[in-house]
Length: 169
Image (cartoon, rainbow, N blue to C red):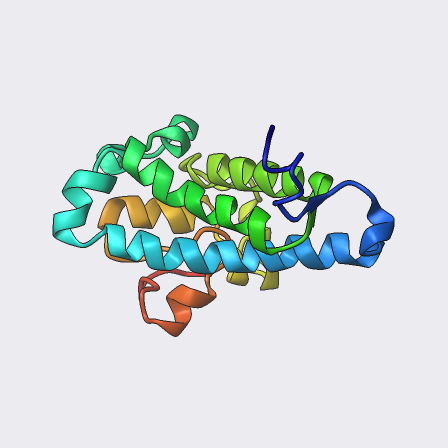
């Protein structure tokens, strides 16, 4: 019998249980929390002693490709998975919201590892790209290693001064 069957997780199936508004709120909340978790874990993984054991495999791609988004050493994959595992036991999530989070995480990671921006140059420096991580932002991380640790948003890099000073939003 699974944790879901036993009612241990906070995953639910009826939208009426929390209302439709909560689908959006919980989705945004989890993305913000996941970005926070990822930023601090990712920054920790860049410590020299941890890097060589946990994160070097991912950085073998100095020029990332979509495949790079799936290139993780097993211990790092477990560390990243812990967030979602804990989340389903703590935050009530509709199963569609949870699937949306998984899809967003996967697609975002693939797009950020393209090595080129999907948006045309003219739209690259607007309010949207200022706060969201794109391929150019993440490419700098793969080239410099000591900047740009976020997953979705740039605000942790801004607040904690890990944003590359030459990066043009």
